[in-house]
Length: 292
Ligand code: HEC
Ligand code: HEC
Image 1 (cartoon, rainbow, N blue to C red):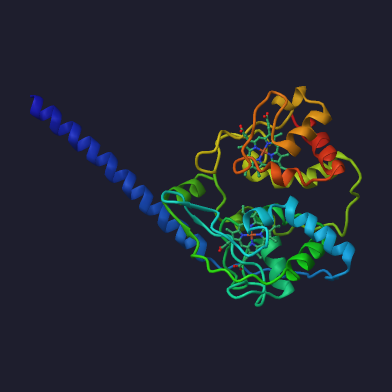
Image 2 (image 1 turned 90 degrees about the vertical axis):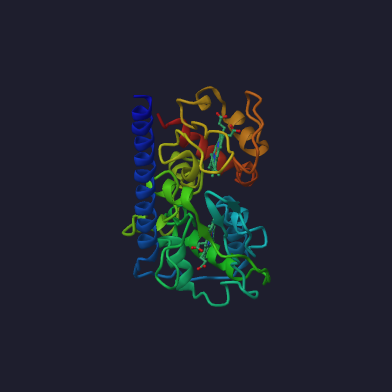
């Protein structure tokens, strides 16, 4: 009798393991197919001018959009995450140095990467958050490209990017966007320019940069970075309801919340948010506070 029960238990466990394995084989196959797909888009290239006002704007955008967090301060690339389960995420060298993409990239390639999330070979860029740059105004896009294309050449050898099982599973369940090309509205028509005085509309434009971690609802949830604390709710249903504008600004400038929580930059990139101008932070506050 005991032997029979043991047999049944063993058989059930083995069946579950086999089913999970088959499921993962499917997820992995599906990911590889999607990562190989070709996408073609007509891109319109704004006029890129290298005057100093434009370069100052481009430099600011390269910080507040996180380019220099991921691609390294000198834009020469780095290994951002190397996790045996999740994958090795390697934002590449964007400069004109050896191994940099800068010397091969046309302006059209830059726009395609930043508005559509695909490389010059028409294949999806993995993990590169193009959904957070797709909505940029033509003026901001031109300034960012001007800044990136005049960066000093850096020579740095980096390993290949590799998405591992947990990365593929998180992508499958929509918890982590390894294929941003799939979530971009490719018919979106960008504005030529926008009024950057304090307003909720300007805040909404900027808040796209928070959606990667705080989700498009801004209500946070499970984190995507290994070992990160849960991502906070930054709408009026979270602590923000009690914060003044000054509290909000201080939190994003110092990484310390009014409740006394000290946030680590590697999980909540407050060094990036500390570079936002006062008007940008005030606009973000107005927009987020209006979110239910
Ligand atoms: C969260 C990290 C992250 C941020 C933020 C980020 N990137 Fe990337 N980027 C990546 C990764 C990872 C890749 C590699 C994609 C690949 O190899 O498939 C990449 C690829 C690229 C490429 C394509 C390079 C190629 O091999 O064709 C360009 C161009 C680029 N990024 C520019 C930018 C700019 C400009 C910004 C700021 C607006 C930015 N990135 C912000 C992670 C990031
Ligand atoms: C790389 C992921 C990531 C990005 C990008 C990000 N956040 Fe966060 N954020 C977090 C995490 C994780 C926490 C929780 C940190 C903790 O508990 O220590 C957090 C916490 C916060 C808090 C504190 C909330 C509270 O109640 O304590 C604020 C405010 C905040 N984020 C605002 C923003 C804004 C605004 C943006 C966009 C400009 C942004 N974050 C972008 C991951 C991120």
